[in-house]
Length: 116
Length: 114
Image (cartoon, rainbow over all chains, first blue to last red; front, top):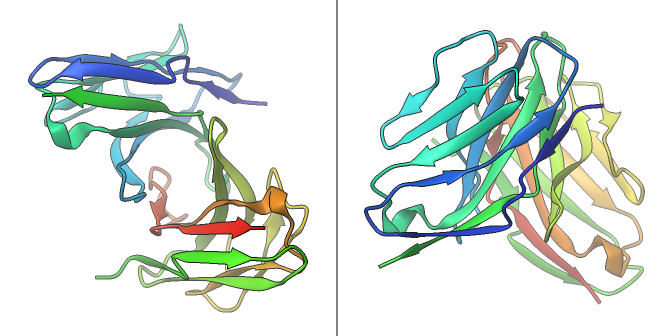
């Protein structure tokens, strides 16, 4: 069975600095999708970024980018120029690729604090 | 453009009471999900519905029932609430016809069982 591990329960970053959140996963599959979700204090789960395993190029969305290392089964999230609004819980998630696959597996989350 | 709507936002129950959490989506998605979120445990899947008319158990289904009323609505019922069901519950939906489509979440229901 697949697992997702976020080994950092909490991280802090100074405003305008860069921070990297770690995520590792375990799978025997070759094709899958990975996601980062953000959960601010409002409780809403917001998609930050997604990565298809078959793509070698790392996904980027504005200040958010990933470092996807398929062989190492690592999927870290880098937040550049951190802003106060980035303070939130961040969840890494895995989903198998084939159509008809419905289950997502979530990590336990990393709480990010942004210091002014 | 409502997305996924959950009601209620907060609920307090006494042990043994029953209630239904409602969820509706307006994105014409086939798949819908119910998760619970507990501190230090991430999100755990309770039930999901791959399409209208089908439901399947997830990781933690005990104590819950679901109904996929139509394509839009997917409700979660607690028949006899227990303190262990104190949690934040999220409904989500997804366009399962697109392989890379993400989950879209509702705003969650905070449930306390005393």
